[in-house]
Length: 275
Image (cartoon, rainbow, N blue to C red; front, side, top):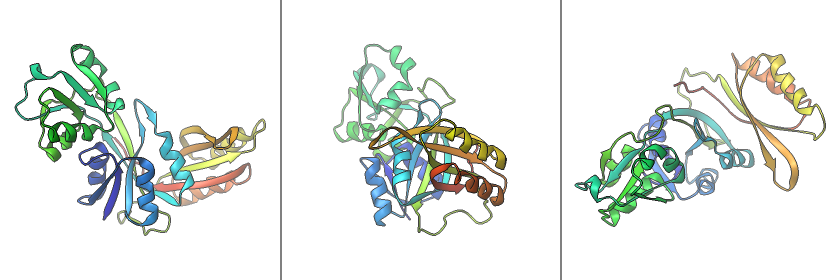
C-alpha cells in the first residue's frame, strides 16, 4: 500500500502511518494539497494527515480539504508527540549554535530553548526535514528538533530526548482514502465515531436547531468548530465529531440534520482512537 504524508520520512505522520497500517510505502509530499491530490488521482492508496493537536488545536486546512474532495476518513490514531534534539553523530552540545525545526515543534519546546538563550532558533519547513538537512550538509553547529524516527532515517544522533514542554502532547491523525476505495478497517472493528460537516442558513436559531437534532438522537458531541465559506463572507461550515452506539443511532443523527441544514457531508465513520 502506498500512503502519502505531508513532510519528510521520519516525521510524526510517517510514524502514525506505520502504527495504523504496518509496513507501507511512504510517499512524502511538501504540502497537504499535494498529499490529497495523490489520493484523489490514485497515485497513493491513502494518506495520513494530522487533524488536531491537544495543545495547538485543529489543522484547519485539512478540514477544508476533507470537505472539498471526494475522500473519506477511514481510521484515526492518537500519538504522543516527543521532541528530541538531534545532531550529527559525535557533536557535543557545546558545539551547537543553531536549532532548526517546524514552528509548531519549536513552540512546544519553549522552556528548553529559553534555558539556552545562546542558541539561535530558526523555523524550518519540517521536523524530520531539519534532520535530513543537517545530516546532508554535515552541519556540526546545528541541531534539529524531530521524532526519534528521523534520527534513524537519516543517521543522526539523539543528543537530548524528550525536550517538549508538556508530556501530555498528543496529535490525532486520520487515515484518508478515496470515497470509492474499499474499506481498510480491520475485521471485527465497528465504527463508533462520525465526523460531519454541515451548513445552516444565516439566521437566528439555525445552529441551535441542528444541535438539537444531535441531542435528540442521543449522540455525544465531542467536537465542534466553524470554518469560513470561501467567497461568502461571514458564512460558515460547521465541523462536528460525534460518538454513537450502533449504526442506527448514527443514521438517526444524520437524518435529523438534513432538516435544518442546507448542506451535510459525512467525512467519515470510524473507530475512535483512545489514549
